Image 1: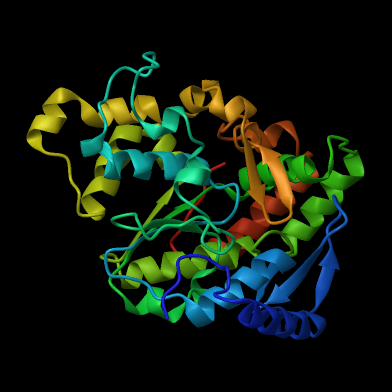
Image 2 (image 1 turned 90 degrees about the vertical axis):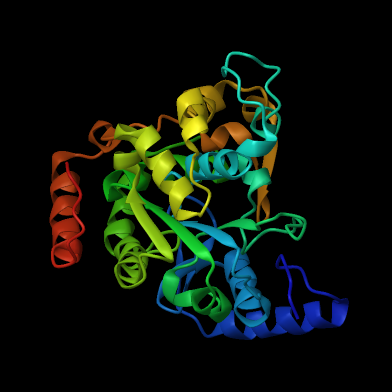
Length: 333
């Protein structure tokens, strides 16, 4: 049976699944988040919140991938919102009239819809995706926990990673959108200590990244792996690379017309942040409802230097070198 979201087909299945999840959760190691009153459970080697585990279990047993599917994967706060907007614009460009981003008559749905509504989070979404062609989905699920049909199909996976210290700082700010705006210094230190121990959203971070990195080395035709920092340095190059990888390359005519450059401008974080839909709209994650503006902060490289003490930064750098040193995957500081 094929499904496109985590909702059950009938109430009996829903009750059965909930009971199964409750039994599973009762046996798992759990740790309280230092910022909010929630727990993270260690499931299949990764720390995941309860509502995500429920969706993950459903996906693993029920989801059937298609060869033409596109899956955008990332550890949270690694550039997911940006990646969604870019891939949506790339894949839908023949349906859109690309005009300068200053022209609010542009007919791209990105002007009126948050990227997270356009490309749903697979493990949490109740949004229909069956009418998409191809289906474009997003996930934070580690590679090792992906549904078997995703691994065994010819669907494409695009994975974006980011400097771990910037990921931590971005997620630390984002977490307070769930639990209030009061940020105490001890929360930063406690949260960083947990991050270094691997206890954070879909962590350990290094295991999440290395899972997709190693898979991309084995299957470069299936998984495109790149860094947030590289995308920042040369947007247009990676826009073209993503389009080619997804089997939808830009034609010579499109190149001459500057379509890749228009996509860059349309999807720039500065432009997306300026749109009214991303200033006032709402988006639900599990039991939480957030403002769309929560997904747009600075997006800067090296912002960790404004928050981490020298001692914290040194600990983080040593840990990153230890975890990634033998992989060939390097992060610059």
